[in-house]
Length: 273
Image (tube, rainbow, N blue to C red; front, side, top):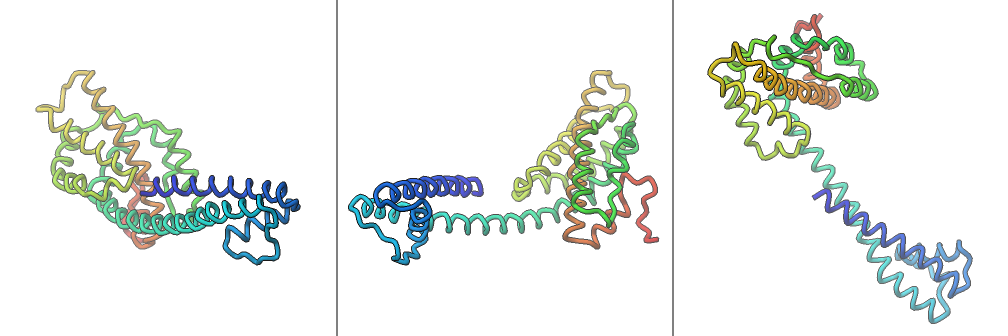
């Protein structure tokens, strides 16, 4: 719906600009007005103020004024209505996303944070971004922006050979019903970043479950699983940081616990010190 509103907004603005420019030029040519007077006349006409201190006296000027009123006023009203629609839509979408983040919080509590803890311990390059991910209550939007910039330079390099795939498979299978319940939630599609993460986690769970044995696999299969792991890991880090920013802004008490149990902090502890 938002896309259609933006399209309408661009159409109304484009038509309104054309009407204003044509109106100014026409009033200068037909009514011999100065550019300022012509602009003033077009604006007060389109805005339906109509002071009457400047009015057309030529037939061409009157015809032009009729066009300005019919087209310009309609576009002006349409622009105002569309702007209001956009404001309402953005507000409703913000509320929906805020509610959806509650679901994302449950995901991190049940699955995401545990996966990040396991993955970060097995990531040989995690020290490159560890400092950037030690989120604190002193962080500002600029700090989060710098952290996101650091993540763009970090390439996850998990090796499936070094992970305990059997335990990872058990962990994911035990939470498969939970993942399915999230996957079936129609609101999930509202969150453009979380949906790919959920798909990637679910795919990893299916890949692991499809193998009878997760040890002594061929090198090509280990490489394939490494790709699946790194896909999940990369998406997890970004979405976790996004969720941390959301908590800091809207739920300080939830942020406090999430900060104290940071999966990238080797000294993390839920105990308040």
